[in-house]
Length: 471
Image (tube, rainbow, N blue to C red):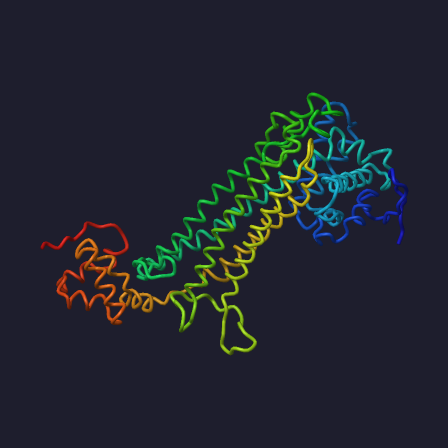
């Protein structure tokens, strides 16, 4: 393998001749090899965001007269190529790393510098013409470029997450409409409660998830505040006074996002509050999604000795010993995804708390877990929608029969026959294994016509005027 020699303060290293990364990236690859097993290149939106920040910085530095036309144009062209999807295989540093993201920042600096050198007609590694630090990283520190990059990536990935969530919401809403006339028993504490429709149950799934669209987008808006120009600790050392506003204007131009300058860079540089809030929003959604999956598994339990109110699409044989068994594998895997997202939020919380003085060096694990949560939730919701929810069918007759056989329907008679009489009927029904319907008629509490009217589905599943029997 042909190589070139690059050096840094620790000495010389051989770099593959065709590699666009340089010596500092190689050291990071060696130091953090397979820590998480996930490299920067696994997240294209992240790579594009890194290049976007370098593009905006080059534009601002050029306008300030700090970069020549040739170098600025070469850097921005290299960044545009990365944004278009080229050279992503050169981002090989593990997502979890020491150094507060310096390795990630140097990975993008070196790839951009070496591609810019090619554009200018030079060889890779001829850094006297375009240097990773002196030119690509000009007016920046890892401590402003790195968080700005991952915030941009989170915002863009949130759009995809919310879009996938919207599709799942629509699927539950469609099932709510499909099942709107299927009467079933509601349950509290796993005990029979009062009747409802299966449509109401599925529509509630769509409504509770709909709340999370607004919540995720609200938290994503917090990520629009950047500290570009803060450089090392927020004092702005090695940057010009006009630079922060200029670089933000170019970020707005490139991303079409309403990028805002943080009001206090010294506060903003170590602060990870926006990331904590966004992670918390994903956790909240995961909790709701997991509860829904719990319900789907329980409602489909059986097929003969469980609730058996709905049928989930059969996906694969469920047992190596029990013939014919089919398990709810899709809700099960989404449950597990949600557990992981909840755990990731704990990781983010600990990492945010671990910041010290003017920097939080634990940002890399926060970035890794946020990306992981977004990706898992997107995939999980897609599988749940396409392989489960869209194919759910209802056992309508079984649901209706359970309502008729339930003691819970006596609740609908409370306003008419009174609580004490209703309680007596319920106890007799349970003790004697008889129906509420027959016992009400036997005790002459209501006529058959009155009872039939009160037990109509529309009388049991929504508010209505009380029918009060006269003494």
